[in-house]
Structure formats: C-alpha cells, structure tokens
Length: 193
View 1 (cartoon, rainbow, N blue to C red):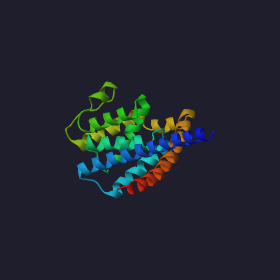
View 2 (spheres, one colour):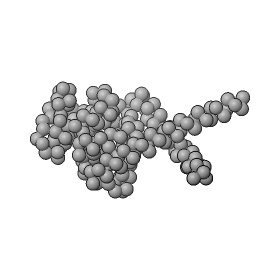
View 3 (cartoon, rainbow, N blue to C red):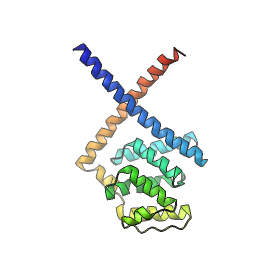
View 4 (spheres, rainbow, N blue to C red):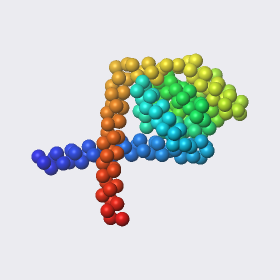
C-alpha cells in the first residue's frame, strides 16, 4: 500500500506542477505580447491578472485561458490597456453566445480589431473594417455586446457553470501547490549548479 500512496501523491504532484506551468506560460505569453507592443509594466501585467481572475469568478473561463486570450488581443489585435477590459468581456460573451471555444473567440475579436472581421460576419455580426484599430475595436465590441452582452456571466450561473467555476477554484489551489513544489525543486536543482 505505501507504494500506491506514493504513486498517487507523485501523480497529484505532477498534476499540480502542470497546472502551475499552464498559468506561468499564459502569463509569460501576455508579458511578452506587452513587451512587443511597448506597453509592458509589471503593474499592468498584474492588473490583467486581476482582470482575468475577476472574469474567472463570474464566468466559466479559467483565468489562464483568459490570460492567453489577452495575449492574442495585444499581439494580433493591438488592443491597449484602455481597451482590454471591454475586448476581453466581448470575447468571453462571444464564446458563450455562440458556444465557441474561448481561444477561437479571442482570435476572432483580435483579428476583427486588426481590421479582419470576416469571421464575425459569417456569424451574422455586422462589423466592417475602417483600417483604424480604435474604431474597428469599438464597433466590434459594440456589435458583440449588442447581441451577446452578459452571455458569459449567464453561463456561469447555470448548474454546469457553477460546477466549472468550482473546478476553476480547485485549479487555483492546484496552481498554488504546484508553485510550492516548483520552488522546492528549483532549490534542489540549484545545489547541483
């Protein structure tokens, strides 16, 4: 029996570290997108992390997936800090309203912000390109919110949504445990440097 317990703990540890790595990689992708755009500050990265956590609390979107989406909004769509909250909410609402994968919804909003809204038009959203990023993003967000405003939060209040939100909360615990394990492993490996 002790061997079985060690294997279970080892398996759980790998799962925790994987959860921690997923969050770390999403944050690193967002930080790099912000650096490339010239907008990076640690304070802004922390604000975006808080924004993603806030959406995780009210929708079914895990914060690491929202963070990955924010990186796409910055790198593909040129979305800036004053536009991020609205563009993120629109992406979440689009995903829920059309039952799209969250990554796909973020891609569609990012591309539309960059003047390529054809994918949104295929879903009956009335968007057109002006070749002005601010105007394009404003019209995209307005059109998505006109059709799907509140869809992501509404999905978060369903029974299924509550279960997903609970799973996301457990995911945060796994990330924290994974962070603790990684700190211990780093200290162990540093002994051999």
